[in-house]
Amino acid sequence: MPNNDDLVRLDDLVVFLAVCDLRGFRAAAKRLGLSPSTVSETVAHLEARLDTPLLVRTTRSVAPTAAGQALADRLQPVLAETRAALRDTASAQREVRGLLRLNITGAVMVDILPPLLDRFLSAYPSVRIELVVEDRLIDIAAAGCDAGIRYGEHLAQDMIAVPIGPARQRMALAAAPSYLTSRGTPSHPRDLPRHHCIRLRFSSGVLVPWSFEQGGEAVTVDPPGRLIVGVDGAAAAIDLACRGLGIIATFENWLLPLFDVGTLVPVLQDWWPDFEGPRLYFPDRFMPAPLRAFIDFVSGI
Image (cartoon, rainbow, N blue to C red):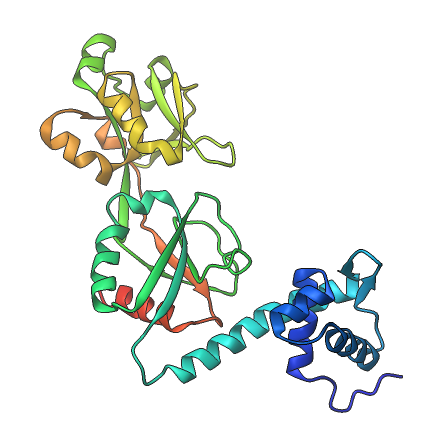
């Protein structure tokens, strides 16, 4: 029977996680500044305490057992939170500093996030920011990010979300005057499949949906798209629309400057749907100081 009195030390768990992460005793020893024999003995002591094999050892490699992997998966976020708590406590009376890593959708990089970052970095000159731009909804903790910014996805229960940027936005349809002169102007969303349409595609392979509403009537159409562009190339897709190559559906705020100068004109404006603006989301437990400062900054705007 395992001795459950005074089970294990935190240092032992740190050693175990290093071995799991680096798949070897020597590599873990180098990272931790210990001898390989000390690392090996520490893991063996942990296995004895738990009465469970945690690692499979061969002459060429070390890998966690199923029980070892399950333990590592549960320990990683706990130790990350512990480190964050210690960092925050140590820096509580000092200037906020460090790295804030955000996983964001490229949609907020056009005109929503840049001015916020400008003001935030001016207020916190010792904070550095890394932006990981992708349209997939991912596990931000597993990806090594502190927080994410997304539109309307279903977030995990342990996530908190706060608005960032406009509370509501609209999806707009637009085309160049030259296109409408040559192809005509649709009078109803059901006319769109007969037009040249410029569609955007998520990295998942799904086309951005075209859904419209007016006076209680909701219509979703799926034009085949004469041109299809990945969402990361949205600016290029808008330029193609400006060249008269088709009708595009995208964020109204991106198109307003082009409406003002007449490069593009609104299409089916009465049908444009509105939706909730972007949200900053983050785990409810893990809160490094730069993220806390960024949340307070965003919430105070």
